Amino acid sequence: MIKWLRMYRLLIAASIRSRMEYRFNFWFSTLMAVIINVVEFLMLAVILLKFGHIKGWTMEECGYLYAVLTLSKAIYRTAASDVHHLEKYLVGGDLDALLLRPIPILLALMSQNFQLKAGELIQGTAILTICMGVMIRQGQMTWTAIPLTMVVIMSGAVLLFAIGLLTATAGFWILRIEELQNITEDAARTAAQYPMSIYPNWLQWLLIGGIPVAFANYLPSLYIVRQQMDWWIIPLSCAVAFLVLGAALAAWRVGISRYQSTGS
Amino acid sequence: MIQVTDLQKQFKTLRKKEGAAGGLRTLLSRDYQVKEAVGGISFAIEPGEFVGYIGPNGAGKSTTIKMLAGILHPTSGTVSICGMSPHRERRRVTRRLGVLFGQRTGLWWDLPVKDSYDILAAMYGQDNRVKETRLAQLSELLALGEFIDTPVRKLSLGQRMRADIAAALLHDPDILFLDEPTIGLDMIAKRSIRNFLKQINCELGKTILLTTHDMDDIEQLCKRVMVINHGKLGFDGSIDRLRSRIGLPTKIRVCYASQVPPCGSLPDTRLQLISQEGRTLTISCNREELSAMEALRLLEQLGIIEDVHMEEPDFEDIVHQIY
Image (cartoon, rainbow over all chains, first blue to last red; front, side, top):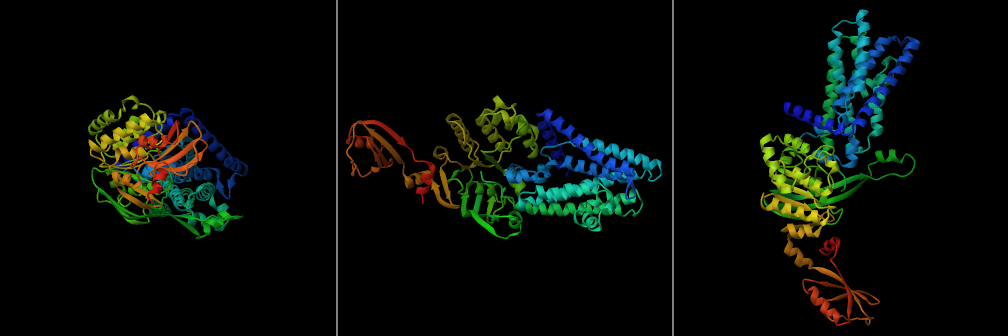
């Protein structure tokens, strides 16, 4: 395990050095990501400022939901960027080179084309700090919420990674996965940025039982922010995250054996 | 060292549906098209052998190599590399293997060549001293010094191929799989690569399996040749036996100074007429039976020769003659 972590760090370092060969592109793409994030959050903020709340969720509470999810996603995409881009490897046969190395393929893939999601990390942290600050001062939550929130962010990152990996693995069967990713990763995550009570019942159940992104932020915050649920929702959320991860890893192993490479 | 038994690989592809919602119907259908890339081949390779693996495009060469290297999982049959299965024990097998795909690099594209070696050494758990000695040895053999600090993307093809060969050898594997290591290189670069490979085989004692489209590679390097076509092994034996099987078919085009009479019969039965256009005759002969000089002497009997053009047959022709 330690060995693999060291290997991972080494490969990430190599990946950063590669990217730094194209400095302009590196900084420009980081800047663009920041702008996109700010615009996205402004939309949410405009709605909140206009109405004051969404279905009984105050501005700080909505900000909390948004920030927790943003941070989870940023951690997942920073730590495992090219899992999201597996399609490129399957269609182009680039997985060949990774399979020739004496390290787990997933580790090799995760360390390719490292991208620090700096924009999302900074913005997420800022919003989270502000919102939690307000809520602690108002007595809506105590200091214990801070470590709990960190656990929720990490477990959410594992969950989003697991969903992403499961979706990518489908590529071993269907090759092109972009459309599928639009639904399982992008649409589901966008939906989870808002309080789930605004959605019809069937959609709520889909986001709990189907693509369980509700466990990344909404359900845990029902306990941390609103005390509408009991403490067990936190360990349950972690359990769900690791369960999906286990399923994804199992599927991945089967998927690898179906890899078809390309003609040369 | 390498043991392959009844190895098969089939690729299943969904048959595409036409028309509206064709994509969706394709996804839901079970209408597979099965293409057999490798259809039950068996062979064994002993330590220290240098084996050529040839065949036309799409014959199943790369698929075989990819199954041996653990990239593809066979549909049926078994592969054993040093007693291990490359798809079940992929990570352990990769330690015993050096693999080179001539069309692709295994190096880090944007980093200096040296960095790639550092990363690879770390992956194989080589300590620094072993790595440096090994690198010094390879550097001398492959003349890496001139470009070791250059990013891979700036190397010439010949340099890149040498860098890739060194990368495949860095962890001191017993076996090398080389998939078209001379593709796209000029004559000089080809010659130097061949020399390296010869040394790697003779001096370092590596077992090498080489696929190529270049007959010269095979003639100069391999003692044993395997020919694959349509996924089946058509020939497995020494280069001499292959030569006696196909001979040395040669095409000679002779242009005469004056019109030659239309000749139904050539001066010798070992010459065959392919075509005649005005003053030009195209003739085929087998240089195993008839040397080029002899053939010309015979053809001179028909008239004064102005120009001669000789053609070695292309590779695909040779392979087709084996069947």
